[in-house]
Length: 272
Image (cartoon, rainbow, N blue to C red):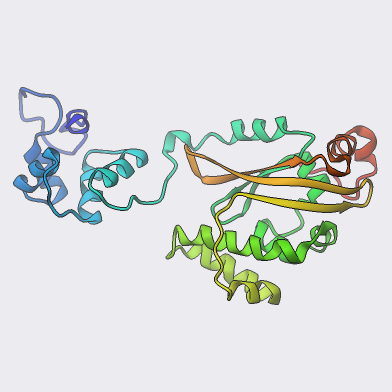
């Protein structure tokens, strides 16, 4: 009722119709615009035990101009599985703030991926330590299996690979009919027989934390913990922060690698 009250007839494409006792749209106007019966819509507002479908709720959400978060809330109120999170238009300009976040994580590596694990942003430490650079695949899954530099540095690669594939399958399961995920999987299969074999296992793991042991040519062993973070306002992005573990004096080595002296010895130029 509160959302119906904030939508004017003009915003809904209706004539004003003169003076109104209450602001916004009438129930019968919402029903007509959504293509449902007036009585049914009234019962919906009253929270009666009626059968609803996602298609009808989407029509109501469109008429009431609900935000992505409000649309999900409507599904929950109706007892249905909510749709996947979407970024609201007003939140799509957050990348500058997220850039500041990963730059503030220096001297530790951090990068940001979209839902398909395509690289969106990465800080200097991710370039120096993980080998992220413009001339490789910008998809983190494909790069994990095909980038010789990353693979050469990654200790226990064979142990980590099944977890990475299972976590990507878990991400795919949130959008089973999404062509973007299918395209990434097909590319990875075509370029890596190892990925194809692991994909056929159909293992699923939620994205969380992965321990990574790396051998950097300048400082030797590095041991970090990669943590995937989600920002509710930007559910289409995943932030991956690499935290040094106490082993191998990793924190001090990372600080040296991003120092002027360490940068001069880096194998690849720093991106960004």
